[in-house]
Image 1 (cartoon, rainbow, N blue to C red):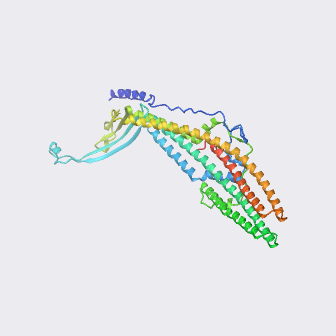
Image 2 (image 1 turned 60 degrees about the vertical axis):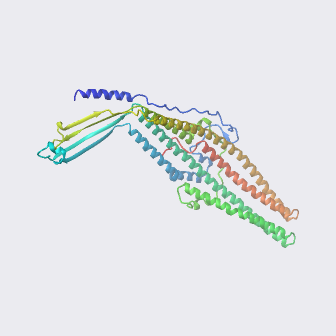
Image 3 (image 1 turned 90 degrees about the vertical axis):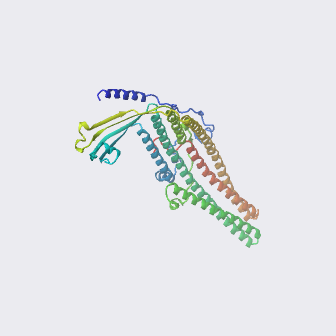
Length: 478
């Protein structure tokens, strides 16, 4: 036995040396993508140079209620919880893959009592019959795949990149969640503002109806003015239920985003509050930061790394697989002598498995992984382009909507003055009732559009922060 141990050790060291060889398959390198030097529309009004405040961008709106909703959504949203569990799943798969790098060791044992049949063919060798015998076995068995060509290493590499991609997926869900909470909140405040203007307009038209009825009673006008006033009032009143429906939808949506039952936020948020005011300046950063800030882009890059490693896993099947196995234990016919030195038993082996002919299946499997890698590369490059597109669109939309809101604000102020003047002229008999109705409708439409535009300004700002990858920190992982 002493002669075989050095030889076995030599063979073992030789195989370990082979295991240190480079893994087959391509080594992953992050792809280089063209990055513009600056945003095409960065010079638009409302933007400044410098780092974008992304981690807590909602604070720039200065609304404590929104701050509270965002904080609560981070702690209780069910979609985010699902994403966190996907990270746990990927972490478990990574641990499983790493476990393949270690040997498998097991403890086994058996106790048997056996007597052969005296009437069997073997009974001829025992004329006096078989005796009952005992057998006791106890020992350790171990096996280890020696990763000569890197199949296990590539498996761990792929699982590690997949785990990192799951973290980026969690961060991407977080970005989307915070944006959706903010959008739903702005929807709520916008429709509350629109409802305020609608109710104000109804009150104004109710006063106009009373005025038309009084003048008709005095014989100063015809019944046509009264009928037109009623029609105009009823049309305006019909808009109120639609706005109340929109408010109810926003409240229920916010409740679900916070992991609560619909209706649970009505008492807290039903009282109208102003639409948040946008910050004076917004820093959009530089295009190159998108690759670092956007979780979906980072996720696509990690998935590409994981898929590239799978080419090596498939390629390793072309080469032989080496394993090292052995056992050490005790075997005896009596329990009392089981642990004697003479009862020791051991063995060591080096199994080799080589798939020499598979009908082209191995090569085809490699081609499949190559094609999937090319697909993932295209998906990554597309995610970068889409990210730039979303930022450019959000920059333009945010800047130009502010022009629209400013113009509508001035128009609504002028229309309010015009309504007062036309009403005064109607009372004096200098104009007909139709002019008053037209100006009231015009004012109502402009105030409604103004509220919608002011809300859209904030919605576009939210889209910009979301497109820049805002709402998460580097260590924002479950």
